[in-house]
Length: 207
Image 1 (cartoon, rainbow, N blue to C red):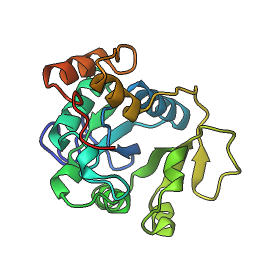
Image 2: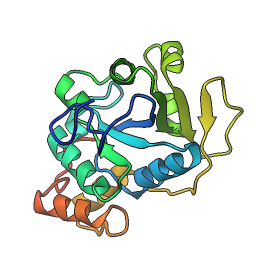
Image 3: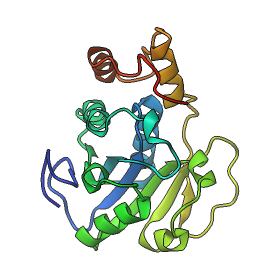
Image 4: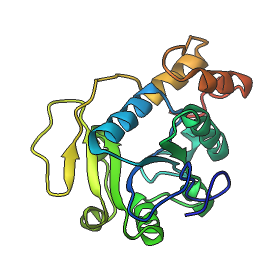
């Protein structure tokens, strides 16, 4: 794993092969406090050395027209995590281009850090979307789910994460911006300033 900005696996410092690494993928369109609370809860609960935020280039279950440009979403993630020593951003999926399959991302990280213990972080809503080779995913990492409702019994290689319920959605933030409403306290202040400065989401481009 190479160091800081410009690498595909920005680890926010020196990486070790035996680290406990959380992988948090998504569109982050935009990143908000709910994402950050999930990541911090997972870091503390699971004893993670790093949490890597991986913005998707094009997720298989969402239309590209709804997404801000990838480099701008990556920039917002960097702004949101820059003051946390254990959080880092990765351009791995953006540089790979094409449809962003999480299995490919986890496999790449496993190949580069074969002795690391990997944890894939997600919200419960992501369990409803079709996944590419779920069995292979569970062989590579432990799947950690933040529930929105009372969780069912966890499957093998899956953990439910107890965390505060924060009902913030990126879609609501985009709608608020488009309507000229405030997004203060929904996103970190640097992300709010970035959205305003770059006029993101002022005109909804779909859905």
